[in-house]
Image 1 (tube, helix red, strand yellow):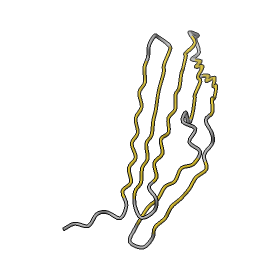
Image 2 (image 1 turned 180 degrees about the vertical axis):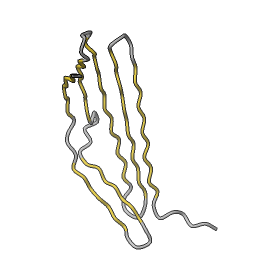
Image 3 (image 1 turned 30 degrees about the horizontal axis):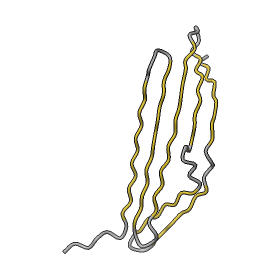
Length: 106
């Protein structure tokens, strides 16, 4: 009979882009991480939303608004297990933020 694994690590990524009208783009992205093992189980969900508008000019100019870390996840833990070690890392993350960008193509 096979022994169950010492740890189970999962990471899932999804992204959807929608172009409702010319020059407009809306992108939603999400990541799901889960780990289960000798340490306490860990689950984390991250999501971002981006809106982009390209100006109708000779030079390509993009106006973009990003909403990062929508769920305001403040801590991420990652664990790994080998035959010789159990390692668990904890990261403190930035809070949710909105960022406005202007991109120019020279």
